[in-house]
Image 1 (cartoon, rainbow, N blue to C red):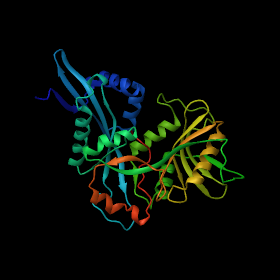
Image 2: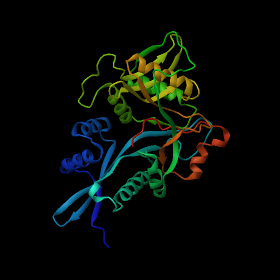
Image 3: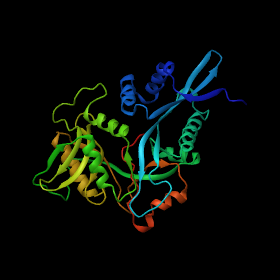
Image 4: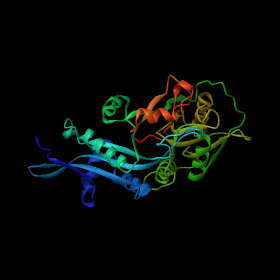
Length: 322
């Protein structure tokens, strides 16, 4: 049976139907989409599946592909994928009424082939673990891992700090610290657009209004008064809750879990929250890390840059874009 649809980039005339689809599937509104556009500017494309029906053309699926950054590998390793740009497939969505037609697979493969045709790596972050098996047949491999969880302020920990200092830092300062911390771990160095997106989420809502004073939001440098301990990207996540979408410790290549948990608790207490959700890099050999990033590269290429048998820390993607 001949396909009755096409895949093409979004045009200006598609905006209303594109916003409607994203709102239906993810709850995104026009303000958020404008915010995303402003962050990534010319470094992204929206791909659409347009199906021809009896009463005209209908938008049935969409995918946004943006420049997330480049793959950084530790000094001493060599691979053709080192330094390659990464195109992230984001907000992959199908109209609920059109599911079961394979549109999600088709648009994902299309975006991957577009990225690879420009000698870039294609990557995605499954919105839930069950989707990993969906993407594996589309030539994506599990590669980027992280620890995710939450801690309550009332929980005990093994770290007692007489004095913690919290300092809001600029996006560029945050990125500089981030690269220093992750230098010995396979990771993604964020593009300017990705950094603007992250900074915009934690420093202001999508309408541009500033967060309330001392509400816990911001890009933070945490120290003990003498030495830096960690950096964190924090945003409020509802009454009594703080979300730390990235927490990197200056020890253990960003993944000192006990220290990270203590800092997550301190961040929550600082803004009066009772709970803190966090994400941070995994330790070598961790049994609780989750695969949050899948990448389009061969097993041979991935083995060249990361070997769990040698006790190396797992590759770390950073901020998730599901």
